[in-house]
Amino acid sequence: MNETLTEAESMARPVAGPDRHVPFLELLAASRDFAADGKAVVSLDLRPELCNNHGGGHGGVVMTLLDSAMAHAALSRIGYSREVVTIDMHIGFMRPAAGRLVATGRATGGGRSVCFCEAELIDGGGTVVAKAMGTFRYRAPADAKAAVDASCRN
Image (cartoon, rainbow, N blue to C red):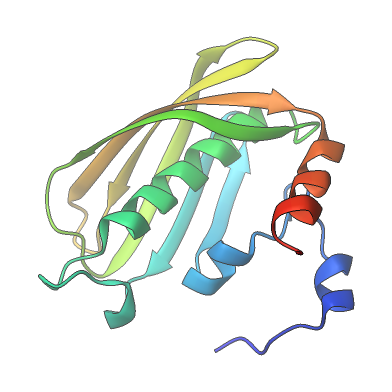
């Protein structure tokens, strides 16, 4: 398990760009495996503490992976020159998630202020377990750090 970082170490990590530090994704042990030209892949190995009471991957974990893959797809479309926030997301759960989970996101349209994306999540057996569509609003990178400082550091 990851050791707790000091506040100074945490503040030194990037809050923008392709290597941004997202503490929640670190907690899940999710990794960004690829992001370029409006496509991104985010994955994790499902562990018992990330499962629901039925033994499948928790819906929140599934949604997080899909959201992260779409956000990175939107960001890679513009070379990580700005930040994004999710403004809308629709999910279809098809099967229980198990094993290694891989979310692939694609930017499908949009313009200067928003990006439309879609994503699918496959499990260790190659089965599609969930699909999503999302809308992401672009914003200036400075806003991301201000939001973290205002909401999470108090």
